[in-house]
Image 1 (cartoon, one colour):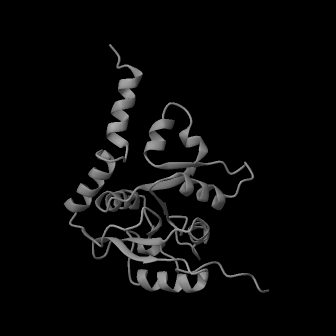
Image 2 (cartoon, one colour):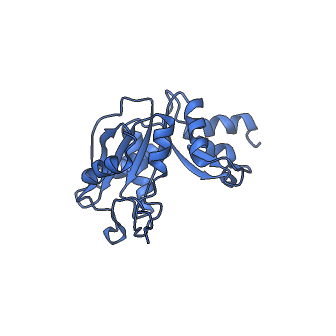
Image 3 (cartoon, helix red, strand yellow):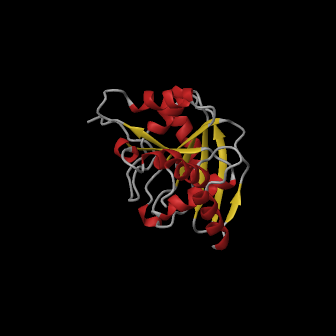
Amino acid sequence: MPAAPERIESRVRLLFAGGSGTMCAMRWLAEKYLRWRGWELVGVEPPHGKFLAVAAPHTSNWDFVGFLGVARHFRIPARVIGKHSLVRGPFGPLMRRLGIIPVERDTGQGLVQQMVGEYAAADRMALVIAPEGTRRAAPFWRSGFHRIATAAGVPIVLTFLDYEHKRGGIGPIIEPTGQMEDDMATIAAFYEGMKGKNPENQGPIRLEQPDTA
């Protein structure tokens, strides 16, 4: 006899929810994978209940597994931005429990304000953003992560995967100063020398420069 809907719901909650007393299976497996591959996880659990986590460098699909492991090890309540269509249909509840925040880009509401609302409604939340925005080499980082953190009044936590040395984890915590260029200089200094899985896909750590022509 097929399992009742409420029983299926309970099983999904057990496997994927990140609430207290519940282990997220995917994150657990991701951390075990990193350990099996000989990775060292360094840093300390961020002391803040709400923050924005920068994930860099981002050059491969395997980064998803790596950052899941980092999130599990340091108990990061990770959430990510995704298309609204991802949470529709029968897998919608599961995708939400995996931490996806659906975004409707055609509503006229800005992404920054949507995320400010998510932070306001959450007790604990770490929005994970890869500012490079692509696994291919990008000429600059997108500034949305800094604008979201500033508007929401949350610190920026630098997380990393350095494939050359097989080290990943938590770096400095930055309180946005309002001076984006100064904060970017601090961020660039931290990530200097780190290599992603495909280092040829890494671009410079800088923001887009305005066209002065």
